[in-house]
Amino acid sequence: MKKLLFLFSILLLLSCETKKQKAFVPDSSGNINHLTVVMKKNQWNGALGETVRNEIATVYEGLPLDEARFSIRHLVPAAFTGFGRHGRNIIWFRKDTINNFQLVQNQFARPQILAISQGEDDEVMAEYIKENAALLIGTFQENERKEKIRRIRKSLTKNKDLQEKFGLELSYPSAYSTVKDSLNFIWIEKPIQKGSMNLIAYTLPAAAFEKPSLKRVIAIRDSIGKEHIPGRLPNTHMITEAAYLPYFYRTKLAGQEAYLTKGMWEVKKDFMAGPFVNYMLQDSISKDWIVVEGFAFAPSVSKRDYMFELNSILSTLKFKRGE
Image 1 (cartoon, helix red, strand yellow):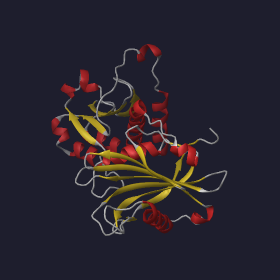
Image 2 (cartoon, rainbow, N blue to C red):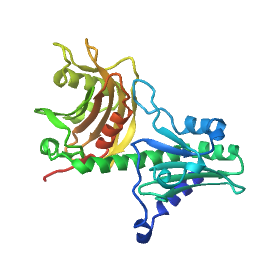
Image 3 (cartoon, helix red, strand yellow):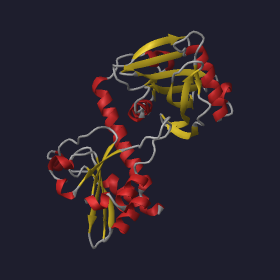
Image 4 (tube, rainbow, N blue to C red):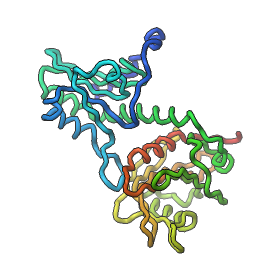
């Protein structure tokens, strides 16, 4: 299985178009985190469609209510022509005597990931999806992250607060603005229709996170919330919600090891809550810990795309020292 996944990854990376081909490939279209699935109606309503929904449209991590990581649009093969082929992420099921699974880049539009599951019957095609679900999810998500960042960079902020205070750079839109800038803390906010999207950054001495653990992350978050993030009512502040056990694991950010925490926040003694994503990474020079976090307040609406934007912004983190 590992060899198979590796082979498909290599095929994807090597499927680069020529300059001549690029000139004739239109721009892809569609909302962020949308996926087109091409199969017959009876397949969509049957076991094959159920396999796609169960394996690919899995739950997006770290939200208060379950939301699928992709919104799926079903197309019958007869409709898979013209603009129907311009989606960024497509899974195409084709019945054929030759069993095959492949990933193709920029086949009908750019950027685009096209997965083709081909087989003699639905069982064969479903098995290809089960075997390659992790590869498909990872590839589609990376495609969407790059597209989100491309859109963000159309209207980048000119704010240099993060760079001047912490030697950090984040690519975020001009719709965000700094609402708090204290000695060792920055809070950047974007108003939305029913709330706000937020980015915060601060540093910690090396000893503050000497033994990385979820318990320690929660203690740090709660102390920062008490000092810097008040609620709407007097004597209220942000804390980590105890009813939801956060995700906590190692990852990479800005090219180095980091600790990622995803969970829920709430305001103590007030009816405010929402999801957050928190990264802690150690500065290789000063040995201080750099903390960057995104959190959303969007009551009574879907939060997936808000958190996807914050995650995408945080993925652009770079160290910008002495500039």
